[in-house]
Amino acid sequence: MYEKTVVSVMILVSLFSFASCSYRVKNESRAKYVYTCPSDNKYGLEKAVVFDDGIVLVFDKKASDNSEHEKFDEMKKDDDLYGIPVEMHDTRHKKPHVRSSFIEKNGKYIAGAFYYDEDTSRVEINGMTLFAKVVDVNNGDFFLTYDTYEYVTDGFERITQRFDASTGKWGEAEREFISCWSEG
Image 1: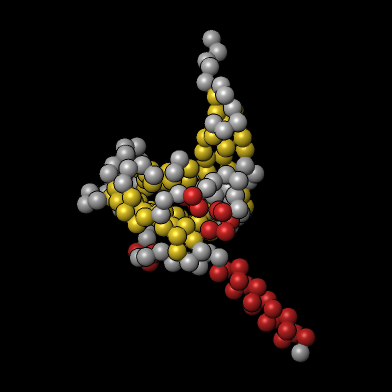
Image 2: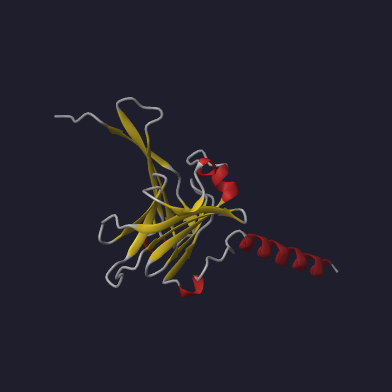
């Protein structure tokens, strides 16, 4: 009896732990790459799905809303955004006109950016900027960064955090002061 109880509890714990990353992106089976990570990072990021013509990022809403580093709960949600709230990164380093969206669904924030009918055969999509928050995918070794001007008057503070896919762990958020004054 004791063994059955332990096994049942272990199964439930395993299912619960996988449930947080189980959100399936539309057409995910056709993705070029799917990267997952624990949501205990400064944005609540838990998945990046990279397609030939775009990228979708999935954030855990609860982790994001509890973060001191972002305010996605205050951002406009729309499945057809215009302008630069959601901006795709690619190897051409251009800012192409893309279809973009940022929605809340099933306890997740979902951001997507896709090219309009463009030839993407020589493009490698490697990240996204979402409301001035940068997510670089780096083959699953995520790099998060943003700049804040809140607490400084003569520069800004750059806040970064890295994920190591080989260990499955996020590093601590690091802060660096960048002066607006050149020393010379």
